[in-house]
Length: 123
Image (cartoon, rainbow, N blue to C red; front, side, top):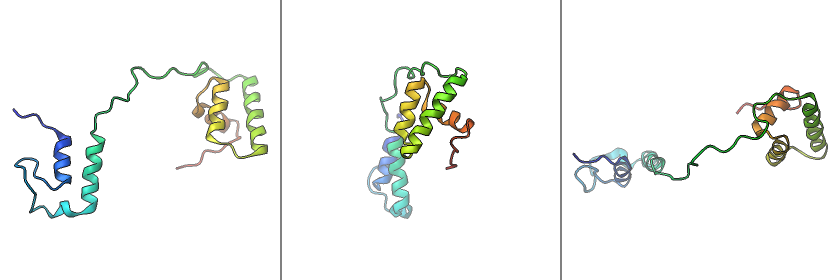
């Protein structure tokens, strides 16, 4: 039994080749559509094997999942407001604050929302 190679099939179709018999696909008008060709190439790229997955998930920050203390809330509030007085908060600011508190940037955002210092914008 012949092994099925979805990447090769998608590439052949995207290039207008018959993935079964070989040769040019002359009777398939849909493959002349630019959107169809793009979709086939995107599917081909999405099936590309990658070796970039880490062996194990990255370590969680030290305080991940731990309850917030009043002192930590006060520190976070002060840091956030100090930056806001000078400029807009950046993603790097959030990463820096997260690292200092041993939390993830998303945990910092969530806590700022809870402290009513930040409102999350819906995407």
